[in-house]
Image (cartoon, rainbow, N blue to C red):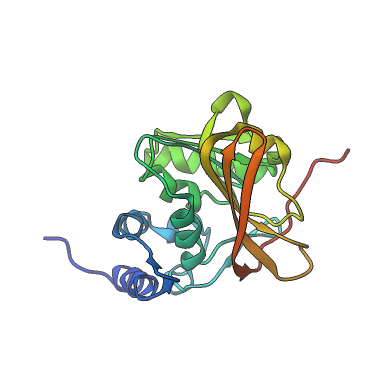
Length: 219
């Protein structure tokens, strides 16, 4: 029998807090909560204590980047409306936590990170943890990852004042893109963008958020 640890208790408390929250008439699904329960957040925060890793708040991971708070990870995953046979693009790998959660819910995850040290560390971590359905590319995520698509859903984990057109092009009709829209120097809107036909999208704002800026390569 496996003994329950303090880390288990902190993770359980964090997920219970998420389970107790709702957004409109919707609640975070049990499948998302179970994926998060199975994905040890402490593994994706180098040098962090468990009390920090399982607090419902963002945590700095170096290179001026953060790992999102668990509730925001759950909410973005929820609004992506994922299915088991989906291929998903994540822009902004960071330490890999969001991609690891997605990997338990879909067929394939393609994740793009612009900072080489973060992308390389995430690649090694995925390999060590046995994530065989996650691919990492070090590149400017503004351009997406055409060779890995098309995508049923896209999650962007950094703030920009517009939706990158290449991402819409690589999104399947009927797919969803979830990202923070607005200035990196201010509060942003978490937006859900639905591609309802080629060349036609529908966007709605769902809540206020604060994300790090979307990093681009120099022109």
